Length: 371
Image (tube, rainbow, N blue to C red; front, side, top):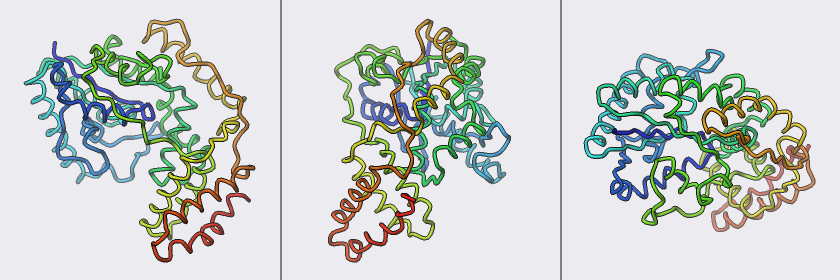
């Protein structure tokens, strides 16, 4: 039977790397009877390999508290473009099925969209599947909740200009989107629509991956044998910032008066410097005790996910918790990391006129981090 494999994330589980893998290996997938269609028109905020974004954009998204994710996103004038994009995406899906038995669609934002969109993307696909005669299988990677949310906050600060502290982010996201970390309830909602047998759950833990490779593991989720003809991407370059550097970036995000091109230049230098600095692993956004307390709220649900979706009695995630002290901006490494950043900035700005003389001003602007 024709099958749609819908990879829905979750975010921060190497989704971008898997999407690049699919894009790079389109022809090899076709040889195996799988299509990875490119959907047009492209979205300005989503690269072409996120080929399921038309489903994410199919309707506004609301939080648990009834508020819109984006203010004004339910305006009538936005409905017509949404409908055009949706129709274009579905036409591309039908064209792919006309040539291949299997189709792969992927977008990490579907994890939230399926839970909170006004129109559930799975409902849209199920209605289409009845007339086009294909089945839907959902692939989802799950990462331990504390690691997932810390990485997601890091990414928001790094790339989205987020100004919230981690605690502010955590309070907000768990109020507005509780299913983002409540894996059991979110999976059960998906299973109600497509059936539990069509929900493919994978752990985002290298020890559980086939051959220790996320790419081989993804091929197995697609019900494909590992094939040496597939080309694997290089090392992921989307690493998160170290804790001191994510705080420096957050402070830069708070500066609304700085021109965007200057802010981007500083952020670029910050990312380069962060890659050369120690991670100071003795610190964490949670202390050891706080991590245990946080994970305890999901323990029962995670155990049920392992039993019902993986058929295992083993824990869903590793229960190894690193011994960490709670990170605070005023720590013994901040001065050294800040100095490394300023040095990197001076090197990067050499020959760019007045830029190299801005380091002193930047140091004064960031001194409040240590207060």
